[in-house]
Length: 158
Image (cartoon, rainbow, N blue to C red; front, side, top):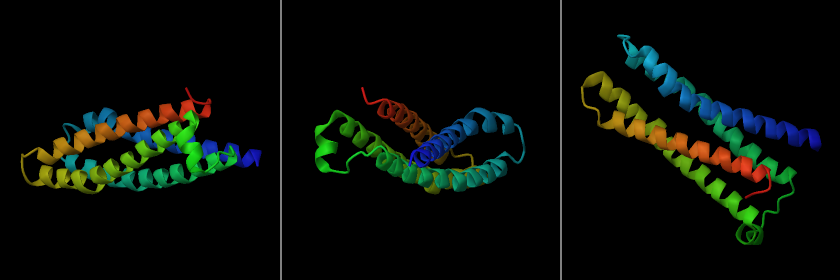
């Protein structure tokens, strides 16, 4: 069981690093790097779609390994634990933020992001570009808070 737990935690950390790293890579490295390229919209679209596939795969693994980590740590899956213990309440906050991140990420990836690409290809309007940027930044902030809570949870809470 111990090696299973370590493997699960390892996969969880790698997937979180991949997810957060990708969200940092696009605005900090990719966008400035392609700013003056004539085919920048196409490059952004191809990179975004490619990352979206692997990003959502990482999210699925985060969900599965998160549940598995709780099982390995013998955290009781009871209403009483999640509502009466400070540790359980912290897990509820993390899971709630994770679900919010999924919702915002889905809106960003499958709606605003695609609309933004279409908008950049056809016109000078920037409505969806701004919405995509803000939902992306909000998702990054949520991911960082979730990672911080994961560290707090793994160390026994606050």
